[in-house]
Length: 268
Image (cartoon, rainbow, N blue to C red; front, side, top):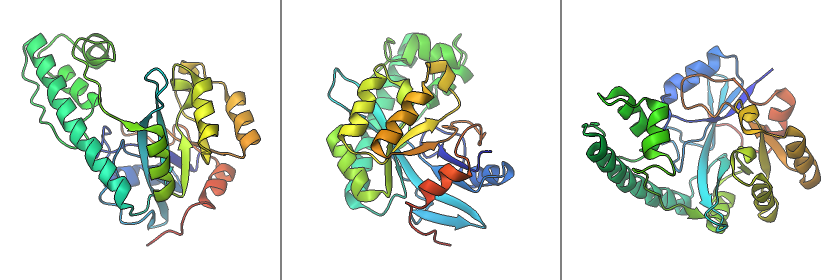
């Protein structure tokens, strides 16, 4: 039984949950805890690393993409129990400025290519899912999946890369700011073995084991669990929610207890 969903996104990045709807959905799903892990951004409405919202534990987290320097391979790190660290906040500000500029350039390329006005304004937190939704809702012939496949995917004609944090810098920032730092969805990367190596090399605290699309990416749970045993890593997990559903996957009581012991006390 899932009692903690430790991977969820809100409108602060590329999700559709507000903080309030995330919390109400977590309660409806019967969760004890939920983590807010927006991309390259700390949710501004959470004022402590861990807060108690009428019995629901809400963990202030972050999902930070980092560049490993290995043939352009980029991986995502999850930080839990984010404190008020000025260096991490400054890096998030830099990344959001880059997101705004990148988003503007992608929108311009799409509008020029398909001849529609998407009505998307550059802003902090803007990501390709926002642009894909706008394409889907426009008068173009592209739906959400087609927008990624044919226009804004990594090999698409309207794609614009973004500057991300080098892995050493990212790990240092998260270590200074967070109670727990882990590797997200290891089998989503082109080279899972290399992602594992980075997890070990940088002495992370955790690795994500439970997520709903694992089968679609040929996940190997035994490999994840063997890595965790060998290097004394916590197992984390969650829905990786970008829509408005929680508890599709996540931690049972035993795994949540192990993570909770590493987090600060909740502030009411």
